Image (cartoon, rainbow, N blue to C red):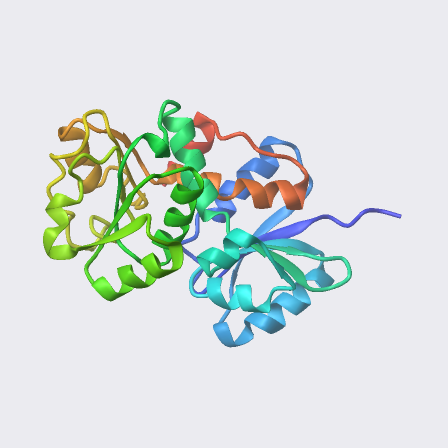
Amino acid sequence: MKTKIPLAGVIAHPVAHSKSPRLHGGWLQEYGITGHYIPMDVHPDDLQGVLETLPKAGFVGVNVTLPHKEAALKLATTVTKRAKRIGAANTLTFRPEGGFDADCTDGEGFIENLRQTAPDWSAAAGPVAVYGAGGAARAVLDALLSAGAPEIRLCNRTRARAEALADIFGPTVQVIDWEKAGDVADGATTLVNTTSLGMQGQPPFDIALDGMHPGALATDLVYIPLETPFLTAARAAGAITVDGLGMLIHQAIPGFQKWFGTRPVVSDATRARMLEA
């Protein structure tokens, strides 16, 4: 009896922009794995039905992204502790007996990107400045706290959203008014932009960063463009900079390993493949 070819994919609405098929497809080819990774545009009204049907068609798991991350968490059979803390899921693994397990690997991808690019970096080295309080910030805050950040200064254009995250993640997270954003970097050893500022088609990031700790690390979750105004300003102020593409790559590793049985290595070739037009 022949073993079924494992299938996985990404569910979004829309999905055409997703780079995940290129990433996973490249790994399947690189490691000689028989399997497929497929983009699927699924309307929110159809999500539950699709997730119930896919395992019957040979799917072993899927990634989910906007607008499905919160809904997928609610539909899951089991949820990891970090996904529960973050309030969203991006990696679903189907169970042989039915249902699926939900995880959120965004925070892991964020940390592993920093560790690979800047091996000497430590979250515990000093204060962390985080700009933005959306869904991505939740994963970043959870990861930074798990990695030992002693103080996180959270600054968002809407203070109430930042305060809601501080209530969830505790007193280590201190909310700073957006009007005082220029003070957030003072003495910071790590700086993270989770906002859309600087992304193609969005306003630039124009907050002063010159008060940061000498040799601080700055990273932007935006990867289009790869060199953002935030990273340019941080480098000019003396920071080590890490772009956001690596987070996208590293967050995909746990799912690929679960679904296809091989843990891929992030190489220069991986990055080059993701940057192809």
